Length: 151
Image (cartoon, rainbow, N blue to C red; front, top):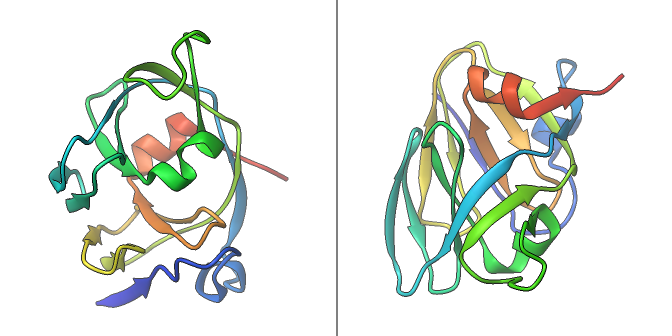
């Protein structure tokens, strides 16, 4: 099984950027619910268990999928729907940021930038490079609903 590792360093990874099937995509503006972790722990995602640290955002999409966003990167990716309550739990909207992605034909794994969380992707899932040193896995149906392929 192919394994990809997040670097934690800004910039796109060679494994995605230099692959001939790489596409540029933009996150669409979508409403989500956000809570902030009050303690370290684990959350279950479609792709595997993910460690959260105090202050990390735990984002829940419209279909109930959950994922973690580090506090460091959260403001770049989400905006509060209630301008009077930024950085508080509640409704947010995803910002239209640019990613690089490639659709995978075989099962694969991704180690997250925290160095301890490992996700498992299925054939047809997307390997997504967020450009901030983190990689992720997005199921094909979720990718189609939440990203626009550019060019």
